[in-house]
Image 1 (cartoon, rainbow, N blue to C red):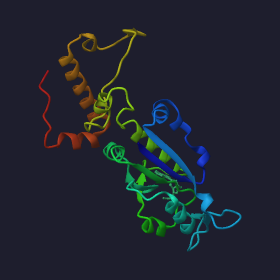
Image 2 (tube, rainbow, N blue to C red; image 1 turned 45 degrees about the horizontal axis):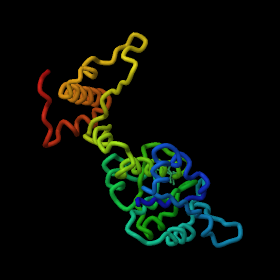
Image 3 (cartoon, rainbow, N blue to C red; image 1 turned 60 degrees about the vertical axis):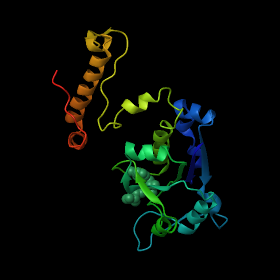
Image 4 (cartoon, rainbow, N blue to C red; image 1 turned 120 degrees about the vertical axis):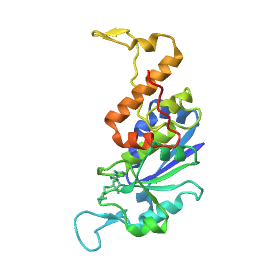
Length: 237
Ligand code: SAH
C-alpha cells in the first residue's frame, strides 16, 4: 500500500479533498493510506509552542527545529522520501510525480509562517518540493497536491491504466481537446474525425492537436519535446 504521512499543525485539514472521489474511493479500497501527524503534540511546554521569532530579526515566526525534529523522528523510519513543502524546492513535475507514485509513499512536512528552521532541513535530510512559483500560507495544500497527483497513478486507482498514459505531460505534450455528446451543442460540432470510427485517423488527429496546442500555449514544453532524440515529425496530412 502507498503510504502518505503528513506533518502539520492543522491535522484537521486532512483528508479534505483527498477523502472524496477517486482518491477517497482508492483509500477505502486500501490502495493508499493517509496519516496526519500533529506537530504540536511534540512541543515541550504546556502552551504547545511550535514557533519562535526569526534569528536576526524581521517579521513573522519560524517553526522550531527541536519540535519539528521530534515530530519527524516519531514517524517510523522507512524508505519513504521525506519532503518539505517549500516554494524554494524544485517545482513538481509529472515525471517526479510518477517517480513518487511508484515508490513506497511520502512523508510530507508542511511549513507555516515564514517557514522552518534551516537546520532541521539538513538534520533530517528533507527534500524541498514546490508546487509552483507562488507563495501559499502553508504547506498543507501543497502536500495535498503532491498526494493527489501521486494517488491517481497508483496501479488500480484509475479505471483504465491507459488514461494516465495519454494525458497532459505524460508524453511531454499537453492533452488534445476532448468532446462528448451531444453531437451538436449551440451550433458547435464535434470534429467529424472523432466520430468516424477510424482509430488511426483519430490517433493522428489527437497527436496533431496536442502538438499544435503545446506549440501555442507552452513553447517551453514544445522546445523540449521537439528536440528530443526520439522525436519524429508526424507525416504530412
Ligand atoms: N517565507 C517563505 C514562505 C513561507 S510560506 C519564503 O519566502 O520562501 C509558508 C509555508 O507554506 C512554507 O513553509 C511552505 O511549507 C508552504 N508553501 C508556500 N508556498 C509553497 C509552494 N509554492 N510550494 C510548496 N509549499 C509552499
